[in-house]
Length: 253
Image (cartoon, rainbow, N blue to C red; front, top):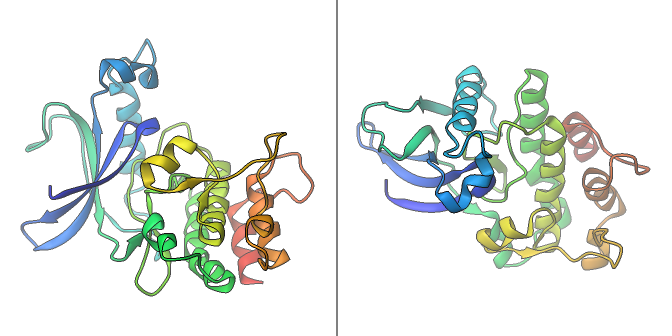
């Protein structure tokens, strides 16, 4: 292990940049640690250490091992508890290719992306989510530190092992959140995740609704405004975007 680059507390996961000492290359490692007592509520009273939850995540990762897409880092290895070299306080791990580039926070710290560049950046990630859902998998792109932006401006999933309770609808919201962040430099989902990622939480109206990107940043095209609002709004709202395939199609259009 070299550098810890993030965490997803809801998944009990830590994200690390590490080195494959055999092939001399950087890799991304997602570690599932035994939950500390103060975080036991994540696992619940029946799963105080998070072991059951971690086991589900490892099984799902093994099932998705053959899935490959340019919008995702390739899964290289999955380690179950007791695997050689795995620390005693680690319940499992997944190793993926390291995605060169920058985090979302690093990208927007230098200024918001041009709307067209933001749309182009999200397209491969939306295509990956569409393909994953078609095969019965969920990416977990609703967390800002799981996604990185490559040097040529493409959003890619970097870290594996999403929460076992996630649905395809959560990925759709995640796609909207990544787009919203690239357009506004604000993360519209969990405020705690935003803070840990070094991002500003998105503003909301007195009624709790998100301020649309065009209100935060005048000049955002109506089409991208509609994609962001449609993915992040209530499921019964007019214009709600329900699938990753729809997001991909709208971005292509």
